[in-house]
Image 1 (cartoon, one colour):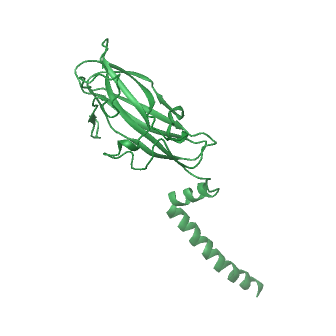
Image 2 (tube, one colour):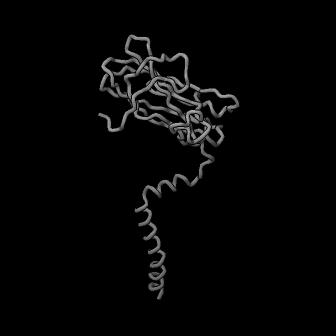
Image 3 (cartoon, rainbow, N blue to C red):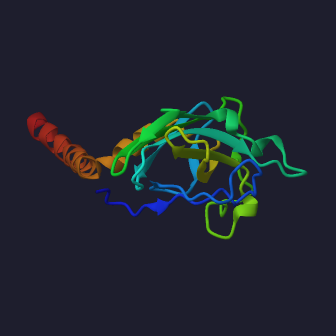
Length: 203
């Protein structure tokens, strides 16, 4: 049994998409409902994981795709569907089974710093659906059936500015703070003791 609390996939009513049946309840659960505010530098590939769990008695077959909710006066930064890929792209899931999907967001090298895929960093929160623009959509149906249900999962990325060339060194220091502190103490002791030793030898 998964430790995380799963949320039952609901009917795709968030956008009122006409091609989604309105009388279907899914038998698949997901461990996260938002992939907002991922962070990376231009040229980076940002990865995230989503786990689906079969909760209904029937075997279900599904797939994913990306979707951009176009809104008048949006700029090009809102549609990041071309940045996103998911593996595997299709799935079959049975009751009690889990499937882990890897979501990769490939930030273009020429991407400008700022928020992409949503109009606000609050987009992933309840009540902020109007601020969402880019989604991944999971859909599934009873194997052999043609009545699908699924879930919209918003995706946004904070493209960071030019990275600090010392960032890798800073990261190493933070991750090894005890060792770093010890090295500093040794360096100070050597700086204090070496001159004294040399002075004694000279005398």
